[in-house]
Image (tube, rainbow, N blue to C red; front, side, top):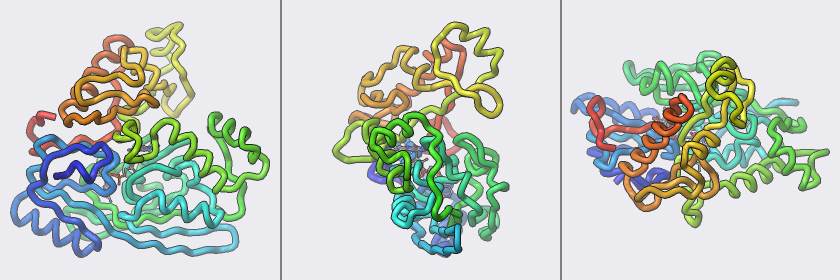
Length: 344
Ligand SMILES: Cc1cc2nc3c(=O)[nH]c(=O)nc-3n(C[C@H](O)[C@H](O)[C@H](O)COP(=O)(O)OP(=O)(O)OC[C@H]3O[C@@H](n4cnc5c(N)ncnc54)[C@H](O)[C@@H]3O)c2cc1C
């Protein structure tokens, strides 16, 4: 069953499953699937993926490459991390050493290799700022190549690995450049207030920021915790939509939607749209629901993938009907038979 490998806790059986701890094992698994004519679905930490109730009719390949190297210079520190290394361990290591640049990304579940896929971000930081390059295996040629940061196509919850090249590359190693001896920069008002309240805002360290971020995330059930039923999710289910100024002024005139300037237009709060379309925090529909602490987190309440996807569909339709905006999904939804309609 795939369910225990995911934070949502959903998904039926895989026809084949390979846990790969080296690039050679990844290659061998891909060759096996090619030989048998099976489709392959790659995943790592399982925190942004939803498998169908029927499972997956092919090979599910779990990237579990673990390695960790560090190189320090006078003002910088390079971290070279295997794709299967849990992301939060990287943040812990950086915070312990006082290296800045990823402290606001504390508590995000999943693997290090998963972070570039949607350019993970939180509290005003994203990995695209500190990632300098990555290595990835081309599934067509089975050869590894390097991508510089500029070649990754990073945007808001976006990269070439989620967009135009989705499914073509398996990320094997990621390289970050962090800053030594630098006061962290706080760009997010809620985090600034928390640090102020703690009386540490004047002489901040990455460890202070990590501690404050974790506290804020826990309050929203955004840290995976077996004891917290509201954290059985994939985090935010929808991204914040970006609309034009004209759309905002003409179609959403007078509505108190939280809105922020963003590249390409104005970013709106998806959480506000969901709540005001009739889906408040704590809403329940069969075996799925909305987190009691975060309006964007759809939670598995002991149901099935079909419950979660059913609720997601209802929310999308209601938001579109009421506000004329089609919300985009953040997680990857995997069909039982790629290319065919899924029941999920
Ligand atoms: C409680 C909670 C809070 C969260 N908070 C945040 C947040 O604050 N910000 C944020 O951006 N995200 C957040 N997320 C989403 C998620 O944790 C991140 O997107 C994470 O980086 C996904 O990594 P993963 O290894 O779990 O990916 P998986 O779920 O295993 O896979 C997700 C996608 O990435 C692909 N993928 C994974 N590994 C590789 C690889 N090595 N090579 C190629 N493709 C790969 C898979 O094919 C799939 O398409 C949250 C999730 C949860 C459950």
